[in-house]
Structure formats: structure tokens, C-alpha cells
Image 1 (cartoon, rainbow, N blue to C red):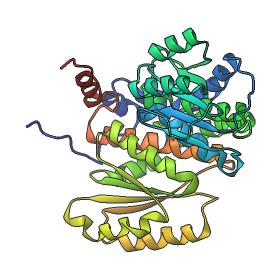
Image 2: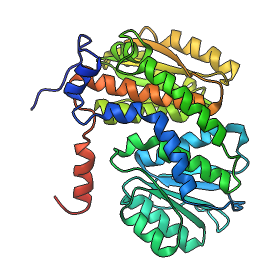
Image 3: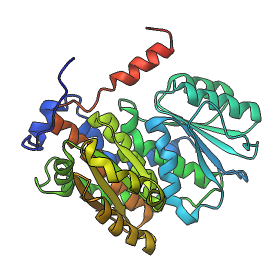
Length: 359
């Protein structure tokens, strides 16, 4: 059996040291988030969609990084959402989907079989469809059917195209009447992200939050807790640790985890090193803030480390994107500390090949 990579906190996290391990330069895609937000807005405009009314709300059908945009857009809209905005992450749509529902089919490659199945299901129902993709079968079908296509820039890993998928979901929600248009908030968020890239990126100080947290988590399994606006971001962090750092990671939400998961922490140290990460936000319920402090105290004895990470910014869009950027960087730095290239996801490609009968 091949030896597994091991974490070392002595590994440099400057640009030159990262480049030696991050051979596909995933870092450039991550720190390009501000410009990607702006480009995503332009690409939605280029699709020339006219507003329509969708009383049944919006379903975002997508898998993995492509489906993440729907979860994050819903968090950004929060109480401003006026109709249901839900995700479909399987081979079909919810049973209650009607022709009055808009279905946004999100697939970066355009060849995701689950999303293609949802596209066909929405068409059979007579639901309004919109596609967001860089090409592939989804783009071919949509153009043949006269379904609008929101283009996505090529050359990314699907998980690195999070800005395009989030902005598309947010803007389609506004166009179909499920929430307000958020163009001004997105502009402000892009400017805010530029400041955070300077602070947290490879040229940032060695003790900046992103690098310090990656070093603190080295050699442990991250267990991330969010609440409300930050709950889907906890899931984003979990999947980024999975794909970038190639390690197990888990996410849950408060207050629910205080009714089950907290008991499991009693035996955590006998199974390995588990680190607890809690998200805080300006809109976190006061009682949840109390639970963060108490839960952190109660799991500390069994955890390898505990951390409270706060969102940054004023608007919900700024705060969501701030934590997305931070998590993407922490997971990449975690990969570098382990000495593993963050870009390849060979096991996913292998699985797809076997499903297609290629192996």
C-alpha cells in the first residue's frame, strides 16, 4: 500500500512554495473570485433573459460544485426570498414540481447525468427551464429546445466556478420573482473580496487567518458547524476539504447538532484527531451564539482544536462570499501542507468512467 501524505506545519505557504505543489494553479482560480463575480453578472446579462413570473418558485438542479450555487444563493437572499428556492441533487425533481416552477439546470461540464435527467423531467412537466453551463450535452439540448443558456467561463474545475453558479442562481431567482435582484450587492461584494484576497491570499502574512487556520487544522479531520446563513457554507467547506485537501470532513448545523452530534464527541479522541470549527455571523440568532460558546467548551477536551470563524462584511452577499473565499483558501493551504496537488479528483473521474462502462 502506498504511503499516505502527511501534514507538516513547516511547509511554506508563500506563492513560490504553493506553486511547487499546486501544479495546476488552482490558487489562481480561488483568488480570482472577485473578477469571476463580475464576469458572472455580465454573462447573465449576455443571456438577455426577460423577467417572468414563477409562482411555484425556483429549483436549482445540480450536483457537487455546480449545485452549490443554489444553496449559497438561497442563503444570500435569506428573508428577502418571496417564494421557495430549493435544490435538487439527484436524478429527478421533487414530486410537487409543477409547470409554475422554474428549474435552473446547473452543470459546469454540461454532461452531469443527474442534471440532464432533471432537465428532461422539467421539460416533461412543462416547467420553465434555464441552463447554466460551459457547454456539453446540456447546452446542446437547451439550444435545440429553445431554452435560455447562461454561459460559464471554461477552464475551471467545477468547484472553482462557484461564483458563476451562485450569481446565476441569484439572478434567476430575481428574474422569476422568487426574490429581489441583487446586482448592487454583488458589485459591493466583489470589491470586498478584493480586499480579502490581499489579506488571506498567498502574499498575505504567514499569520493571517487563512494560513493560521490551515496550520491549526493540519493532521485533523475538520468538523464544521454553521447556522442559518452559514449552514450551506459549512457544507461548502466540507466538500472543499474533501476535494482539495483529499481528507474526510463533516458538516452539521446548530442548534440541531446539540441534539445528537455533541454526544458523539464524547468518544472522538479515541478514534482520531477531530477539529471543531464553528461559524459566527452578524445575523446568527443570540441563542445560537450562546450554543456556539457552550458547545465549543463541551467538545474541547476531545477535540484536537476548536475554532470560531466569523464572516466578514455588511451585506449577506458579502458575508457569504467572504466565508466561501476563506474556506477555499484554507482547504488549498491544507492540501499544500499535506504535500498533495489540490486539483486532481481522480476517484470521481474513475467512478464516472465505471458508471459509463469504461472500466
